[in-house]
Image 1: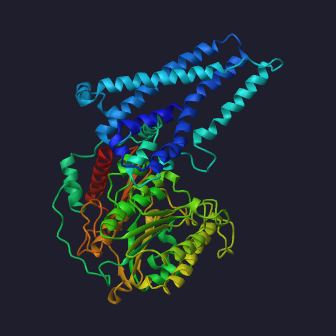
Image 2: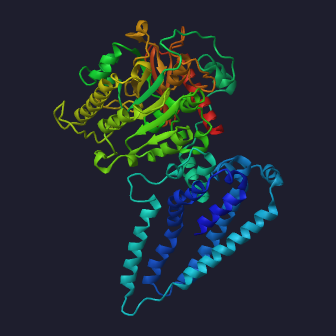
Image 3: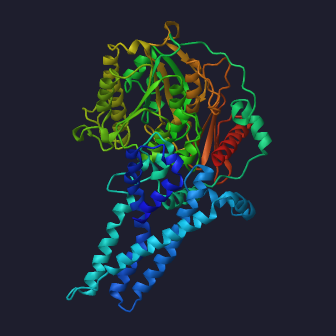
Length: 604
C-alpha cells in the first residue's frame, strides 16, 4: 500500500507528463508495478521474519521493540529515497539508481543541483509519506496477536520458517522461470508510463548489485591514442569525420519489407556455406546460393541479450555486464526499429519465449515496435518448449500475421528452439544423447522450420518485395567444446536473401571480417537511410572496408583480423592468446576498442 501511495505521489508530482496518459494507462502503472513492489516488500520483510523465528524460540527477545526500530529506520530511509526520486526524475529523466553515488565526492555540486528543487513541497511530501507509513504500521501491529493456547514455540518457529521461505515467491516476482526485473513493468511505448510503474527503491538496489559486478578495467593508454586508433574503423564513435564510402546497391527497391530473423545460437561451425559442417542447415545453405552471404562475421558477445543489442542498435558488448540490464542506458541507444519507423515502416516483434528474460522486454518496448508477440500470446497448447513456443509454432504464427501486416514492414523474429536443453518436437536427425548431437538436432529443427516457413512465404504477394536478414544472436561452444574466448565460438553466419535481392547480387560471397554491430549500418545504407546515429556500426559492403572484428567474453576481449586472433584477459591484464602473424597494432586496437566502448557505456 505504501508503494502504491508513493506511485500516486510520483504521478501527481509529474502531473504534466501524467496528464498525457489516458485513464487505463494510469491504472496500468499501478497494476504492472505490483510485481516490483511485492519484490521490494519481500526483501525488506526478510529481517522481521527471521527475527520472529528467533523470538519464538527465545521469548525474552524484545521482538516488538526491535521490529519497531527496524521499521522506523527502514521506513524513514525508504521515504527519503522515494521523495528524492521525485525531484531526481524531474532533473534527470530516469528513476532512482546508483547514479547519485557518482557525485558523493562533490557535495557542493550536489547541493547546487538541488538549488531549484521545491524543498518545502518535498519536505511536506516526505512528512506525509512518513505519517502514512506510521499509520499503516500501527494497523498491522494491532493485528499481531499472542500465540494461541496450545500452540508451542517450536511449532511457531517452524511456521515462521515456512512463511520466510514463502517470501521467495514475491521476492522473485512470482513462480515464473525468470526472476522479476524491470522488463516486467515495461508495458507501454510511452517511456514515462514505464518509468512510473518502476519501484524506485527496488531499482536502486538492482543498480547497486549490477554496479558491484561491473568494474571497468584500468585504461590501457591515453584517450587521445585510443581515439586515434579507433577512428580508422569507427570514426563517428570518437567524433571524427565519417569516412567517404560507396557501396553497391543490392536491393531491387529503395523501401522493401525487412524480415529480420535472429537465429538462436546458430554457430558458423554448423553452417556449411560459411565453412561449417554440411547437412545441419540445408535451408540456410540453399538460401546462400541465391542471396548475399557474409562468411567472416563475429558475434559481439556470448549471450542472447547481448546479441540483440549488437544487432538492432549496433552497440558493442561489455565484458562483465550487459547494457540491456540498464533500461536508462538502452533508452539512449539508436535502434533499427525507430530508424525504419521514421521512414514509414510498420513494425512487429516476435519471440516464442518470455521477453522478460535478461531484461529484453524493456529494450524491445523502448525500441518502438508497434506490436509485440511473446510467450503469453500463444495458447498453452502451443507453448511446447521449456522456453515457450517452439520455432515451428512461431513461424506458423508469423505466416498467418504477415498476410495482414501493413507494408512496408520491419518484422523482427527471435527463434529459441536451439537454446538449451535442445529438446525439439521432431525425430532425431543426429542420433545419440551427446550434447553436441542434441545441439545439432535443435539447429536442424530450426533450419527445417525456417524452410517450411519460406516455402509458404514465397507464395505470398509480400515476399517479392521483402529482404530477409538472417543472422545468429551468438555462437556456441558446441560442437567441439570451443574455449570461452575462442574465435570459433563467436563466428556466426550473416545472410541477406529474399525477393528484394537484385539478380546480379544473388550468390555473392562477402569475405570482409566484421562484427555483429556492423549489420545495422549495412542494412540502413542499402535502404538509403541515415546511419550516423549508429556510431559503432559500419557498412560491410563499402569499398575497401578494414577487415576487423572486436568481441567480448567474460572479463576479456578478442580481436580478429586477416592476420589471425588475439585475446586478452582483463583479470591478469595479459594477452591470453595470439596467433603468430598478429601484430602489436592489432593488440593495441583491441585494447583501444575496449577502453572507449566501456567509457561510452559508463557515460550513457
